[in-house]
Length: 502
Image 1 (tube, rainbow, N blue to C red):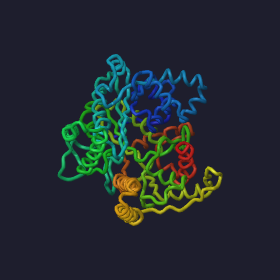
Image 2 (image 1 turned 90 degrees about the vertical axis):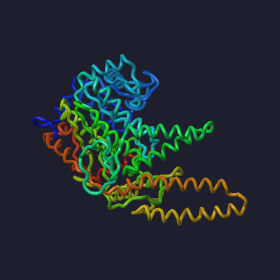
Image 3 (image 1 turned 45 degrees about the vertical axis):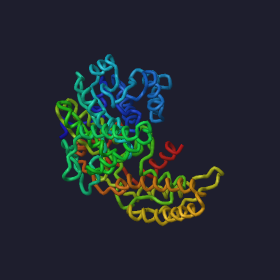
Image 4 (image 1 turned 135 degrees about the vertical axis):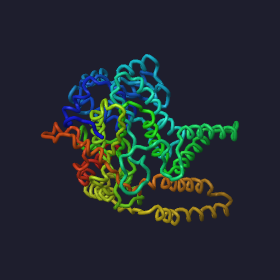
């Protein structure tokens, strides 16, 4: 329940961060950058922003923050405001890069720095995560689960901590149908009846499997063998407990562990759905990396994708990155000092303003017909129609007829010709298996039929004073304000072409 006296407005939210020190993990990621830029822009009197990044030493951490965070085009308004030299001085004064990693106890920091942080930090934002659906199980557990434990341990040492905000994912709720509530996981809870999730047992299992691999292989043990075994173990354990992939499974475990360990520390768990390009400020359309849904656009742009796995009538739950950052900042203010609280927010759109896959596809068609791409020779690349498979079964049938049967014929010919085409067959068969594997991992995500309830977030929205000017609307996170047709056509698709397909 949101605990606020009176209304939140832009002035109150921005004012809250004046004189505050914030520790942010995962700042080199898409959402992390947006949050850092927003805080610096709306509250230049923030005390310090500590950014924990993987690096060998302090100098390497500084170089990484410059290269991967503050040098980004996203910081254009701040550069304009301060000028080049002034911007660099401002960043140097406000941002403190830290060489460390959430995977390690005390985040891998030395005692003097740990003591400084414990005395200084008012807010912790945990955005560090490995988001690979098919990640090694040991790596995913270290970052998405054990990292949460170490961060909680540190949070309890902080003398002035007001709250901890943890970024999860809406899809941690699993492949459910119907309305999915903003409800934290209980200890041991799973998505499969008759099972109980013991996080410590999962950590022990990883160690045991590694030992077995080493004993079985002996001197022939290889990193490749271990990597494959760990990836397969992740999927196996995820599906045993009812989740579809290692990423969402370990993010759910992280939420569960946070619920058990936070004690009196006020905690907000933010569950965004698919985070897309910036809607309004500071740079509409700015994007980093690609999302599954953007494969349609990239395939259209390059004209190298003839088919795609999607039902155009299904809702793709998307939310612009700046809206997620705005919701994070509003939630920090709303729950600051709310002792012992644990609140979950779905930053999603499927309930209040659903966007079907068809909107993205039609926006893409419209864009590329009106703005055709040119090849290297300067000629127009003709825009072809794309075929969509509405079920995984229909896709497998297509793959069987178009690729698997010809592969089997090639295999037979190869045997008759004493291995003449062995290399070709192995290469094509490996590619075929890779595509089938991708569909196996990503298929449930493509056909997700759940709808995320956002009643908690709506209550937070209702505490926001109605804006009377553009300056008052700095922290908009209402998906109903987005016209998806216009957003995809005028903002998101041009953004992908400009910032992703450079």
